[in-house]
Image 1 (cartoon, helix red, strand yellow):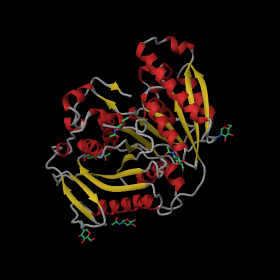
Image 2 (tube, protein in one colour; image 1 turned 180 degrees about the vertical axis):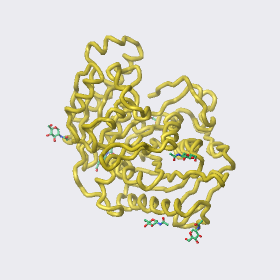
Image 3 (cartoon, rainbow, N blue to C red; image 1 turned 60 degrees about the horizontal axis):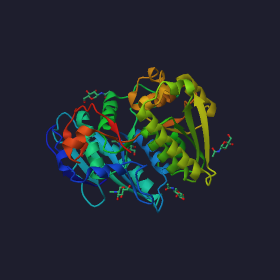
Length: 403
Ligand SMILES: *[C@@H]1O[C@H](CO)[C@@H](O)[C@H](O)[C@H]1NC(C)=O
Ligand SMILES: *[C@@H]1O[C@H](CO)[C@@H](O)[C@H](O)[C@H]1NC(C)=O
Ligand SMILES: *[C@@H]1O[C@H](CO)[C@@H](O)[C@H](O)[C@H]1NC(C)=O
Ligand SMILES: *[C@@H]1O[C@H](CO)[C@@H](O)[C@H](O)[C@H]1NC(C)=O
Ligand SMILES: *[C@@H]1O[C@H](CO)[C@@H](O)[C@H](O)[C@H]1NC(C)=O
Ligand SMILES: *[C@@H]1O[C@H](CO)[C@@H](O)[C@H](O)[C@H]1NC(C)=O
């Protein structure tokens, strides 16, 4: 495979971020989501993989993302490679078929990279409405998120797709996972300048392909979108909605409405405002629903976490190929209280954690969606430049949702 080398920065210092410093206005952030994208425009996605094992799940989700001539997908597929101890140079390598590769990294990852490039090229070949640019990012795990977020900023992507750090084992349970990948994911979730979706692949990848090279058969895929409320759920709904237009997809949307007990807990102004926006989105969705026979919509009243689990279960046990959910429901949903004690992966959120540790959805993959978070601090200090260029490990206390 043929590569161009672009040496972006030296030492551990993530100077790459400076190279990407953006001069564009903050308002541009409004569009950095699936929901905020204009109708009939391109959707830009940065898809990250650590190895070939992440590739099939990622490509399946991209395939379901319904690239069309009116709204094509522009995919930046990134192979994340750890910078070896001996090297000191963080690199971004853009792969194309015109240039030669001098190979600054070891053979094993080069081979892996070649396989990854081939898989993504295949996605492009089999779908006219998908354009793929493959790249490698070589940096230490501690600062990898800086490079990912800077690229996302530079390419004005709507969405970053990340692989969950644990992989499914033979018995359907999740393995222990790689803590380095987990750290990268958490850092991207905190710093992303756009929406983020994390894939827990429990079969959606392998179900899609007969073999590595052969591309999708046409069969129905059952997708469930679980709506509790808040910006992340609205973004997840927008993504699910897009997928529902795909001819292979049957979508079930379930909205969990808090019962009286639960609502009494909160009379906060911002909570009510959130709920109003949720209602508008759902109404909008239901209106368009009438004309789409491929979608089922259901509302269920729930009072607490236990009832949510029972309700999810009642939709179907091991029935869905994919659940699409929001990551955070914040203070707006007392009904998820108690759920967060379940698992140990904050990156999945309460519902995601529950699904992944449940025994009724062992073969269901999960897509956890986070709407981008804008931080006042970043807005003031960075004046519209990359959130990541502020440096590694910067903690922002004030988190504010934007619409
Ligand atoms: C972002 O969206 C707004 C309206 O929602 C639109 O006017 C603007 O042109 C969009 N900007 C970009 C860069 O797509
Ligand atoms: C990498 O592979 C080439 C042949 O493709 C071989 O000549 C070279 O010695 C290998 N380098 C390392 C570091 O293994
Ligand atoms: C490179 O990948 C191919 C799969 O495409 C595999 O068969 C081969 O053994 C790999 N080679 C090395 C050196 O890892
Ligand atoms: C994480 O990265 C560190 C530093 O490169 C390495 O020593 C460690 O083995 C890695 N952990 C895993 C689980 O791969
Ligand atoms: C998805 O694809 C179908 C045709 O395959 C198209 O009619 C529909 O508009 C697309 N939806 C979106 C949101 O792009
Ligand atoms: C909607 O639900 C009905 C009854 O559960 C089911 O038969 C049908 O296949 C569902 N449709 C979709 C698109 O999921």
